[in-house]
Length: 134
Image (tube, rainbow, N blue to C red):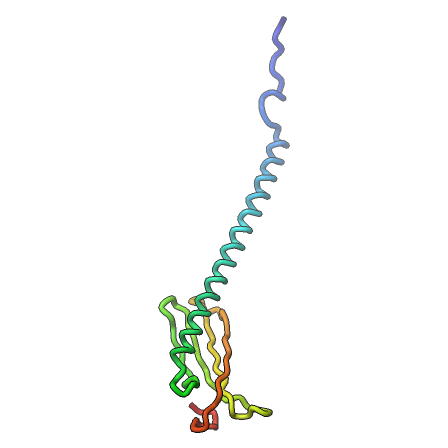
């Protein structure tokens, strides 16, 4: 029985088959890349929030004096490069006029982007200045 010569079909993939395979592979790689990039952004944001929470807590604890109120307005920077600012202002208006101190801690990441602003209130003691100057 004579052997038949191999046809083009038996020698490999066609150009169309290769293009379709390349398209499928490219689409899968794009989706994988976007997923990894999204996970990295989420991890970075979570890290920033965790550091900001810890830093704001430390700043508030350091800037609370024996009278139970935040002292002054100050700025600083953590060893990780996060910057913070603490501000104190008297709350005015209504029933609480001049009797509460609003303390806010603002935290920025090392790139200068605002991470969080934390706000808390303390009672104002009678011997503190009432004109808002500290």
